Amino acid sequence: MKKILTTLLITASTTASVFAQSAAPGSNLLQLLALAQTIVARLVPFFIGLAVVSLFYGIVMFMWKGRENPEEHDKWLKWMGFSILGIFVMVSVWGLIGFLGQMFGIGQGGDVPVPGIPVPGTTN
Image 1 (tube, rainbow, N blue to C red):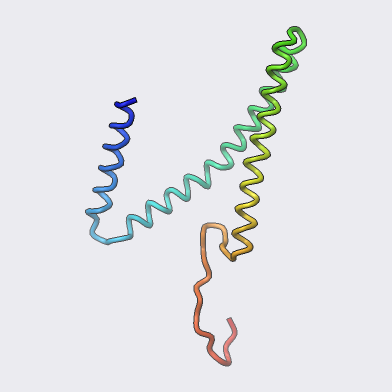
Image 2: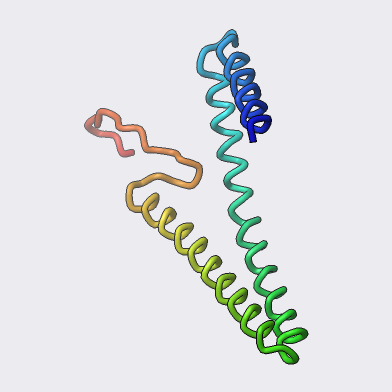
């Protein structure tokens, strides 16, 4: 555990020092945030797909091993229940975040409308 923490701290400090020594202040930070946003945007569908595959795995194992042994039957039934619960939670949180983003005017990708001074005679 100490080796893992040491490795993570060294990696984080090295990354932080590289970004701190950059020529253009803030540009690398924006690139890092864009990279984090891209990673999260790709991980959400991946984890939902993984939960669906887990559900189907549970169904197959339920039919294959569950008919012979009642303990296995209960085990795989519980597995399927947790898979369905996981899918429900992930999709619900994803939908709630989308709803709140739409409600506050934040588009996909985190764009926020920039306020401006209204000029008479023009339409925005």
